[in-house]
Length: 166
Image (cartoon, rainbow, N blue to C red; front, side, top):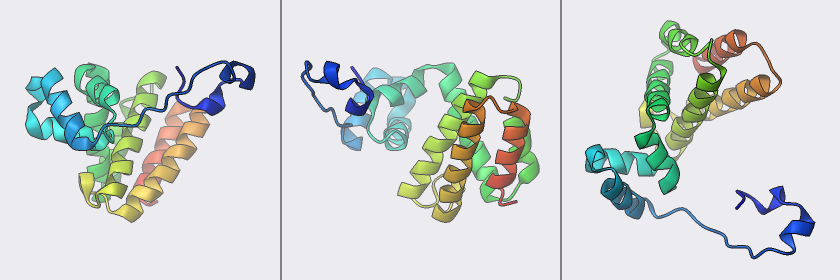
């Protein structure tokens, strides 16, 4: 399996059958997620289905894995603090992962998911669409810095400043 046909060599792709799978409608995803993870409750399942755009596997992973759940909770808090221009709290939350590159990557991924959700539903996590779009740009720059083996502490500090409009 591959996320994109473009990532498969043409010689291999020519010998394969291609099946494109689309995400579930959000209501169906929420019902399925609630069936798999009843402790979420209807509201929690609907929220995860919305956040992950109907991608049941990603939503279930966020519900089941403690690290993914924690990253998502922290991302929501970072976004709420950024919406209130609480730069100190944003920096403090980001600093919690400055010694854990994998944790920082997970937090950046979760921030991207929450910001993308705010583009689809203005006001989600307290973010206006303009701030969410700005945050997504800053997140991409942070991801590139980390991919280039940039200093994690500096990357997170710059991201925090960008999230608060500095």
